[in-house]
Length: 364
Image (tube, rainbow, N blue to C red; front, side):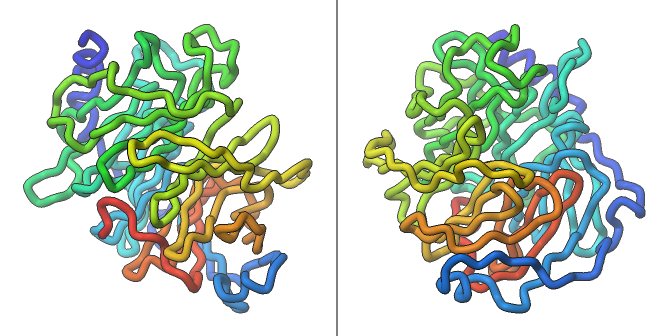
């Protein structure tokens, strides 16, 4: 309870901070669309990526962008973890800061590189949920009567401990349609980003499930005894996504091996039948497996070495969309969900593709 009240106290008065970024940072599209560089490894890629696909930078001036999320309003939220902020990109008005700080809210200097928040998702009621990363928690933003995120008032803390110990630094998250929430918890949001960080008390870098997260009443304390550790054998779990039918959960691992795993999801939400989906092997390009999404046919689009990797549901590497800087995460957007938005280090990019993204909670 003490942690919960402290979190609310620190967030009160901070959630309303909002400021326009200088016009040079993103008031308009920063660059014309250019023909994308696509490495095609399988003919099936031609049904997903047009021959004349264009990659366009729509905003830049950041440090490490993460967690892009398309909102029903037609705007894009994303995190800049280094500046400890969440920003909104609007096609009409560009970029503004909507929340700062978004992760770490302590009074002492953070002492590390990434104090901000990370992944974001909408629950089945359309409420924004945030992986706190530097804040070491997972929390939900309630809605105004108009149905938009209420960033001016205190959030609802969903999770911050497991078995009495602080979480490492929740990184990415995804809802299942039954209202349960899954999230990864590597140490990248700790000051040293390592397993030997003095503040890291959990032995594992796990994947967790919070049953009935959507049912937690606004502004009530979390129930840590309900949090379930569903995976504990990946050294650096990072991005995760469900298959469209929710029969499988994909989880990738960033290091030391760069790989993607697939797990069967039981009716009770537990995971089994671990399968190596794809192993990137030794790779010299920038970037690593990170955030990912699926399209309506179950193809997987993931941050990876050199850009965005596209896989078939069978684990065949179909293509890579080259991006000039390391990619943190991706999100489907646009009225028809056929535009893939790419959070890549200092900038946000977009590319128009041929299959729409799978329908996810909050965007049905």
